[in-house]
Length: 360
Ligand code: MG
Image (tube, rainbow, N blue to C red):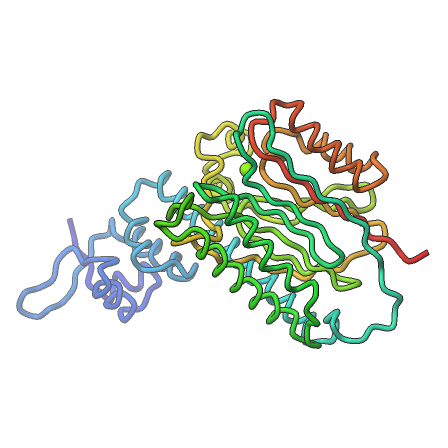
């Protein structure tokens, strides 16, 4: 087999000799032979395809270690790896896009703490939490107050304490006057307090607590026209607007990551043995990075915050129907909890429903 000089190989692969030398140094594309005396690199024609693949993957922004792995794979497997990589990039970008939107709103005076000329909207709300029919105790917490809506789903021994402590820490926001323009800062501080509170009740050695305990936390802070959303874990927020139901949170679960990466279909996820395994939570050793969003509320909006005890057993169509057909928040939460229990009630179930309306 005739080996190509680096110049000929560079021309054939449309890469510069400089790039090829770099790929060699990085271990991404090793020449077929290096002359021991002159150090000249020689390449086999069969390496052209790999050289181009490396160039494209570099252009995609893939880290070097991952490029090395992809290059060692069969084409089918490599395709799966690239798909997974890109899904992760898009998920990260989406999270940063939300934060960017939050900051843009915040800096352009859309911040709700600043003065607004429009009449404030009003909020009607109800919360209900139920043990369900199988579990011995209720580790969920559901809360609805004039400014805060929250659901927390505790896990592990002491999980109930963890969820309650997290929600309790956020409740300070209800009485706090959020300084103009510092909603994000106030939320961050409150989350810090929530995390400390969870660590406080789950420290190893305490009665009824263990190191693996923690909680999800999904909450909305009402500001009179907007809802600041804080979300960690697999509790959810749904919005019923103009008759349509939207899920406005993204689950922080292993299974959701597999769906995002195209490795699992939503249908397969339903019966996945690890469907409740969290990749983010409030607890010791857990990634507690929150998703933060600032959400413009409209008169007529109905929000549902719920723990997985509802979403796991009650199909989205049924949730949609109940939210659309049940007039008051109190009846809506009752109806939803009853539906979960009618489906076996395998888990604790919590619902918070809040209706936004224009003042009469
Ligand atoms: Mg649960």
